Length: 203
Ligand code: GRF
Image 1 (spheres, rainbow, N blue to C red):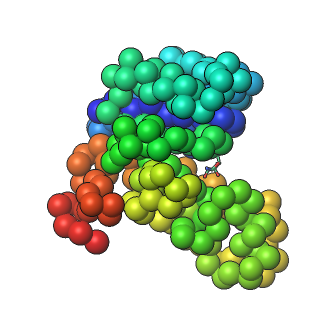
Image 2: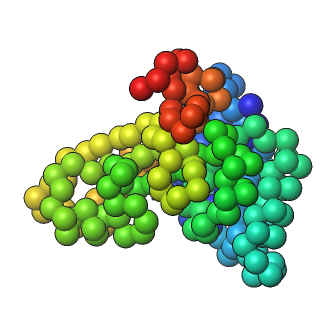
């Protein structure tokens, strides 16, 4: 299966997917990386692995619809079966999301449905939760809201800071995202009637 990864920044999750896909036994190949920012450090990371990259800047488009349309076209051009959002920091239009529904996944640094949006680690500490983690989910129209595919959790320590928590959750993310993409590419998970199914069975 062919996968396009959308990034806006560092690209460490993209790097984790690329690393997993280097294994010939992995069921997906990273066919391209698209950034909405020309200065995303992740672009150089992908290029080091010989992966085709493209910047499609939102600043070059009049509106969100035409920007998303250009991204969709580039994804199709790459012959992608699946699209992974990896630190892609733009909201996507309903048109884009519906076009790729069931084939479009995201990683979020919290145990959804808690802590949607940004600053998840600081908010988790402020809320005093004792368990925190990361979620891979199908993308639907509402942000950080689609059916969950996989989660990884850790215990929040008593002396935890935002930085320590972010680093520990990121490690989980780098294992979780390749695992979730593997399940999807193997057809072991999918989305049906707005929910995730596993091996053909509802959760
Ligand atoms: C990750 O924490 C991811 O969960 C969130 O944005 C961050 C991106 O980091 N969606 P990176 O660019 O993958 O290093």
